[in-house]
Image 1: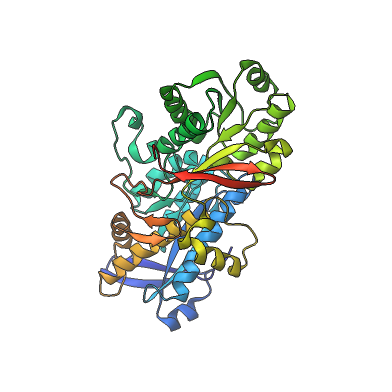
Image 2: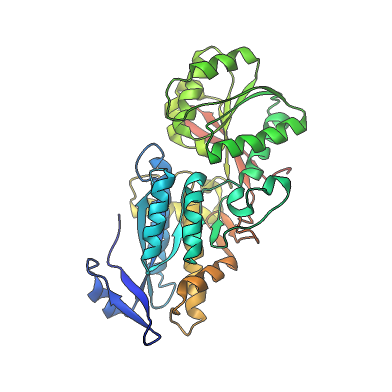
Length: 409
């Protein structure tokens, strides 16, 4: 973890003035004092260990890169940005504990993460109560921004502190359905999910659009993502007559599921969302993964002119892990916080106000800039205004982009 000292920015209640207080174990105080900078911490929450760490480490490193580049450019005069990354292990309980820890640190003026929608559900209220802005580069469950009744058309933004740079499953699921039915010629699908917030929600939105288009549901089922033996559901798939399997879930289970489907003799592709779009999926699925498909948010980062500097700078920084599926979105999430801090400082005579968190939160709603992933801004629900998605296919040992576009486009 690339951490230096942290300086607490606290409101002196008795005097009503902003004071700087050194925190005991954060030993770089002399350097910050000499530079005259105030330290602003951007928290990061993601799975840094465990099965999903390939995605989580890319999120952490990319946010770290944004902070480093802001400091190199002296982008916000008088402010030094630092990252504090916490491991949620893709567990809601750990995420909630991390949210509590981050809100307790007054240096933290924004948080990037988490990866999992189910983890975010446990964190949102904690951040909202503290007026601490949270921007996820990866959450796709529509209910996080539009409330539990979003599918009925009753959209309500429950937590004003929550934003995301990734588009939602309300778009991703139907986008996959349109591609499979209209362009891949798949008319008979077997739908499987892992019963988790992300997986079940994604499968549900896919099913709604696929049947609307005229596609048939050959069968449906659920799996335990902690299991390694999917024999029962594989038998159902094989006997169903399906020409494709749609899986709502993540790559640790999706890879073995695909492998076992092919081994059964059912030579049909497995298709999933951004949760399976990682090289680890290809490794777990084996040679039979060729032809499997995934949708993921945005356009391929490597193909965007706006991302060339990000890719070069990430490589130059020497991170051991790839930026993975959400690196560009994590960078943009961190940069949105940096832009909001800049707006807050510029609007307060070059200083952080006593109510910095509330001011930064308000500023995020209005940010608009050209980011790594394209135009970055947020709608009235805190959702990304960038709705682009991409279909990827496994070719050899790599994911290759097939088509980018928007829903119905």
